Image (cartoon, rainbow, N blue to C red):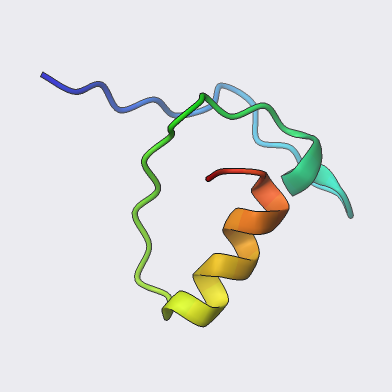
Length: 47
C-alpha cells in the first residue's frame, strides 16, 4: 500500500519551491505537458 503525503504547511514566496524538502524518489502526478512539468521538477530537485 502506498502513502500519500500532503504538507502540513504550504510555503509561499519566490524561492519556496526550491527551498522545500521533498522525499527521495517522490512520485509527482501532474497533468502539465512534459516540457512544463520538467521545468518544475528541476526547480524542485526531484529526479
